[in-house]
Length: 68
Image (cartoon, rainbow, N blue to C red; front, top):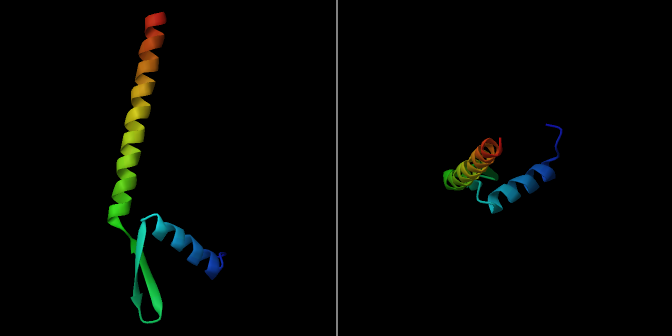
């Protein structure tokens, strides 16, 4: 990978702090894995975001139809 180890560690730290990954010790290494709870929270947020965006789009289209 063209990314340095310290950069990877920094990115993993940010993802861990955000609750998107977790880690466990395995000997002298840390094994990172996706945290399903954090991923579920993002999915809920994205679902709500798209729901709201599509409702706004629908309202705008219906408003344009009323003006025509």
